[in-house]
Length: 481
Image (cartoon, rainbow, N blue to C red; front, side, top):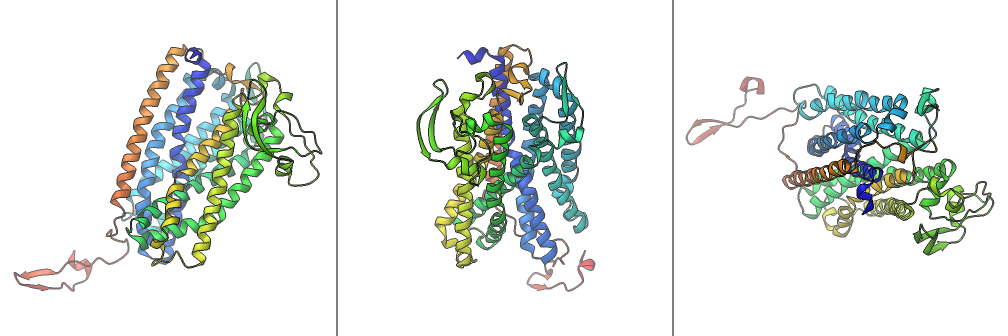
């Protein structure tokens, strides 16, 4: 229990708890924002009221996640001042401005138009409302862009010089568009979109399984499936290109991801371990199942292997990550989920082509709907696993190769950090319970299919002219009102 008196360890644990919890909510809002744009656009184009009702129903999940995301994101940023003051002082010239852009540009854009998107259906022109939905989605995803740029700079610092312990910006655009930024932003964008698609698909499958509004939710299920056809395979490709970048810029992280202890020189293909039990102290794997030569070809996809695969033993002990088992299995969890979701998409497409997803037949596909329901939370697990690999694999650096994590923490008593850690954990647990409760209420209640559709004529009830006789009111709606 020595870690209870270690300020560095406790501060890392606190940031991990807040980050792991916070990221659950923006993952859904960024992806679902795009889905809301799609269904509202379909409504405006086709005038099919089902698409309007879908936009109204799914926006309830959006606002729930938005609210919890705001509540949990603010404390996480405050930690840069309370727990990581030396880090903030060193990187503030660049890192602070990017985080400021995320708040003043992206978050404010999303928040400014959220009210119109939620409450402006019958108050503003449909085109204005659609533009508001687009801007909400843009704001949500712009937040991802700025946050990933800031984090990518921590992974591959560029455009700066370290002068007297502080980073001085020499080329702002080089710092913004550092080597990791494009792959990181793309990979996270498709991760949030894929997670949202499978959450929407899983909830739709629940309604279909329970034979509630089967025709209505068959529509959302097919929209999700059509989008997943492009998203799921492309996400796997982006994951591969991210791995190639890690090999080039962060060989110690790649070695931990693959539990590679010995260096494989250029020209020789490294073996790939399917499963292993890494042993940090002994600098070996106590057990492993490998595929000979596979890793080299996975990384380069060609016979001429131009780069070595560096082993952990060839990296100084104080310059490499030591939670090898955690990084190794988090990486494999992310990969396994990515391929599973792509396979599920492919299987579902086959059933679609066979005519098994028609309105009349989809409720009979119980086994398929159950798999989709099971898959709903898997995207979250993959995202969390990816961030564990990304951030734990960067250790022992807060800014890779430049500033150590141990030198970035504030000089505060460990007891203070332990108190705040326990407090955050308790509050976040309550927020999680509340979110699941209100989310389940939305699901149980279901969509309100009786909502009036904007732009359509409302028929008033008959006028009661006598106790036993009803005469329809045939006057124009304007006159009735």
